[in-house]
Image 1 (tube, rainbow, N blue to C red):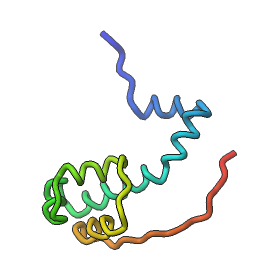
Image 2 (spheres, rainbow, N blue to C red; image 1 turned 90 degrees about the vertical axis):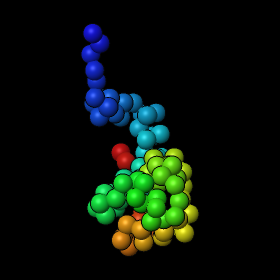
Image 3 (tube, rainbow, N blue to C red; image 1 turned 30 degrees about the vertical axis):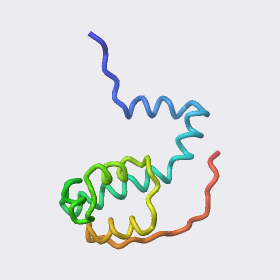
Length: 99
């Protein structure tokens, strides 16, 4: 029987690799947005299908948004916010350098 390794354990191990770390850091914003969207939907007590109905779209579209594989427009983010009873806030923060 093969030993199972948790994804978070692999991620921590791979972060030690500079190339992986650089690629992961480049996607940080997309991961943060996807995570925030999932949290907003969950707080609203909605399934992807329920959210899709409120947004007048399909569950597949919501799944793509939450996957982080697509970059939604501000109009889509506004629809998402309204459908989840959230307030959309976009900000710019100074970039920090990692040692």
